[in-house]
Every structure is written in structure tokens, then in C-alpha cells.
Length: 384
Image (cartoon, rainbow, N blue to C red; front, side, top):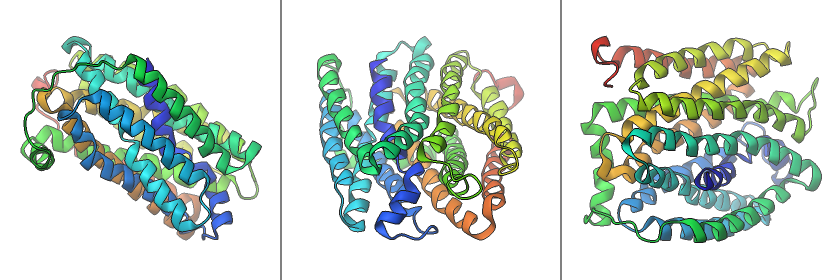
């Protein structure tokens, strides 16, 4: 549970900016169509961290890696909070994203500490903390921004990150044996090879890319219609929509348990169908806010169920390379989120909310088609 809380606090840093885009655009003179770069750069930094930082978990002690990332993350958050120019803001956000990959080191460590029969459950528990962090971040950011401005969001996060670092010093295992004796360059080279040589890993990576492109499409664009007339919602009110989706934490835990039972393929198919269907009630904005809430719940449940199932499946493929597997898998996640963010603001500027819905439904439908076209023979579903 401490890992889950630490992961939630860390991943929240990536998503605080989404309900703050309007304020950031105003303070730094950015246009509505270009302010998506704030989210995109954070995600790109996160992607680089997945490539160059997370694989270190197979080479050096997780305790040392996690605590170092926590300390540097605190400094990056202070940099965002005190930024006086757009350049400083964007560089600090990219650094924050780079260091937020401590989340994936925690997931890999939790999987390593769990027994094989409980690995999916362990991943699901930590991921439930991540879900709460992702979705609660929007509400927390909105509330704090309404009270003390957007800078208060990042200063508060810096304090929480420092406090969590002090907690992890006390609880992280001090001695974990690492069987990998490869050099850093060899470990980095092995990451793409793992995915290119293993069809299951590659499919799960592509699914991650698409579901998080859809996820980011919705959450990045949502602030734009809700902050404008006829709604003119405050940051806190917009953040409440994220809080509704925290119910997806349930899906994370349940999906992990089902994956332990060999039902990963079935959970994936059902969840991708729900994801595609979620865009129907979402499309009723601005006509019906209650239907939008229904769509939020369905979308978040579906995305997190697929995400946990993906991780449970890939972590069983190559136990000796879990950090690399998580890092490589999350590269797909990160770039999907980055593309969804920038595409969402462009779609909204071009065609309004319906353009966002078409974009998100397109990502979701493609994911379902890929799953249907690449699933194994029904006789081997349980073993998949």
C-alpha cells in the first residue's frame, strides 16, 4: 500500500497540468491551440525516462534508484512552481516527467517481491494507487488552483514528494539481489529487441499506445469546453470529473486478480468494447452533463482494466528483465498520451467537441480491431 501511495503521488505530477491549461495559457501568453505542448512535453520527458531510467532497475539497487528519483523530482517540481518564463516552465515540466518514471520502478519492484500466483494482484494494487493519482490529480489541482493559483499545485506536490521520500527511506528493502550482469548500453539495446522478438509484448505495447491516446484525448480536451460558456466551470468543478473516475481503481484490482487466473485475453476484449462504447455518452456534451459522467466512468474503468492486464501478461514473459519490460511497455503508453494530448487540442480547435469524440473513438476502435485480429485461437485463451 505504501508503494501504491508513492506511485499515485508521483504519477499525479504528470496530470496536474490538464485542468490548469487555461491558466497556464493566460499567464505565459500561449494560444489555446498550442497550450497542449505543456502536456505533450511532460509526456515526452516521461517517455525518455522510461527508455533511459527505468531499465536501470535491472542493474542497480531499486532502493537507491527510487530515492534518487524522489529527491530530484522535488527539485523539478519547485522549478515548475517558480518558473518565470515559458522556457523555464517547459524545461522543468520535461524534467518532472523524466523523473516521474519512479512509478514504473515501483511496479517492477512490487512484481518482483510478490509470489507468482499473486503477481497480478500486486500489480493491480499498485496500479490502483496510480489510478487514484491520475484521476485525483485533476481534482486536487483544480481545488488548489482555485485557492492559491496554479503555482500552489506544484509547491504542494514538492512537499508531498519530499515527505514520501522520507517514508520510503524507512520501508524500501535494503538488499535485493540482481542477477543481471550486462552493461547499461547492452540493457538499453535489449529493450526494443524484447518487444520485436516477442509478438505478445508488441501487441500489448500497441494496445497501450492506443488506449492511452484515447484517454489523453478526452482528459486533455475536457477542460476547454467546460471552462468556456455556457458552463464556465471553476478549476475545482472541472477537477470533480476526474474524481468520478477514481472508481476505476476497482477495475485495476479486479483485472489483476483475473489475470492471475489466466483470463487476460477475455478481460482485454470486454474492456476495449466498453472503451469504444464510452464515447457515445461522452458525445452528448454540452447537451447532457450526467451522460458525460457515465462516459467518464466507462472510459476510465476500461482503460485501467486493459492497462493492468497488459502489465500482468508482459511481466510473466521474461522475469529476469521486468524493469526493462515495464519501461518498454510504458514507452508505448507515454507516446500514446503525448499524441492524444496534442491531437485533442487541434481537433477541438478545428471541429469542437465532436472532433474530440471522433478522434477518441477512432483510437478506441482501432485498439479493439487489433485485439480481435491478433488474439490467439479460442482453445488457448486461458493460457494467453
